Image (cartoon, rainbow, N blue to C red; front, side, top):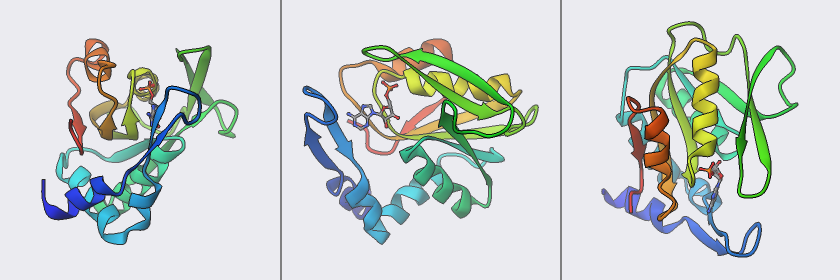
Length: 177
Ligand code: AMP
C-alpha cells in the first residue's frame, strides 16, 4: 500500500456502538475531508478496471465514492437508492438485515442492456446490500464488471456470501484486512 493510501486508512474513524450497541462503525468522513487521501482512494478504485461504462453507488456513502470515481474515470454515475426516493419507474430488491428488511431501488432505464457497471460501496459487512444492488443492475440488463469497497467487516464472510451468488464478479477491497 502506498503512503497516500496508508494515510487514508489512518483517517477512517472507528466509532463503537453506532448506530446501535455492538456495531463498530467505520466512519469515512475524516478521510473524505482530506483531499489527498480522498484522491488516492479514488485513483486506487479507478485502477482496478477500465472495462466499464457506468459507476453505480449505493445510498448514501457509496454515492460519494461512485460520483468521484465516475468523474475521475470519465464515466456516468448511477444511484441505487433506498425505497421511495427515485421518482421514475424502478426495480426493487428487498434484503434481510439483522432485524427486519430493507429495500433498494434503481431506475429501470439507469443501466441499458449489456452496459458494464462498476459497483461501489464504503463497507462490506454481510454482503446483503451488495447482492441486492447487483440483482438490480442485472434486472436492468446490465453486466457487473466488478465491485469495490473500502473496507470489509471481518468475521462476517461477506465476500464469500456475495461470491456464492455472483461467482464471476471480482470484489476489490481498497483496505484489505
Ligand atoms: P451489509 O449489507 O451487511 O454488507 O452491510 C453493508 C452496508 O451497511 C453498507 O452500505 C455499509 O455502508 C453499511 N455498514 C454495515 N456495517 C457497517 C459498519 N460497521 N460501519 C459502517 N458502515 C456499515
